[in-house]
Image (cartoon, rainbow, N blue to C red; front, top):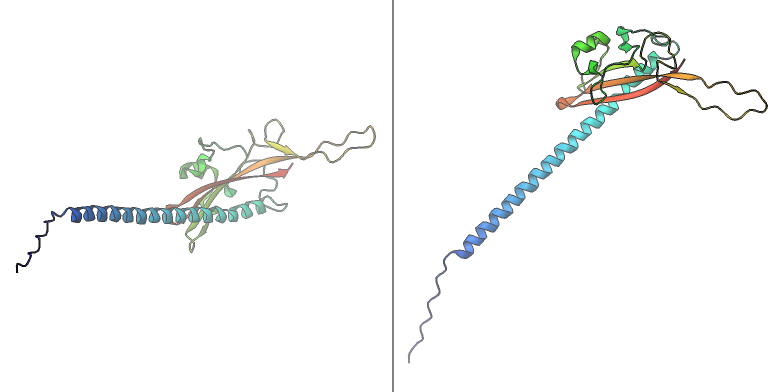
Length: 197
């Protein structure tokens, strides 16, 4: 009796191994891309958190400045420049983005204010530099033609031929801040407020 011999296995030429290696490289590249994307997203989220915190830190300057304009404050009756308080009685020059040039250059800032007025928090690594300008074309008493002013709307009607008194006017002031924080993060913030004339 004749025993059948097994047929010889066909030789494989390594094509399957080559395809597996190509797929493995593609998966590896995709994994690296996902990791880098997550790192970028986390970095961006961290920077946004720093910026948001710096905007919140700017509220410290707002509180300090509003106290200076209170009835007994150092700027309550100011109609001329007061460099000791970072106050300019006329509108400051700004760049194309509306940021006063005094906040962009230390030399220009020296003509408007004092660096000793900066609000710093060493523990939080935050420094706030601010300038206040009155939105007027000239110093002295505020006028409706030379200053940006807001007025309150007249209240209600009157009974009779006597017209209501004109609403009070209030001169507009602009507070501009440069807030510097950790990782060389820097934010510029502006706020306007009024003070009755």
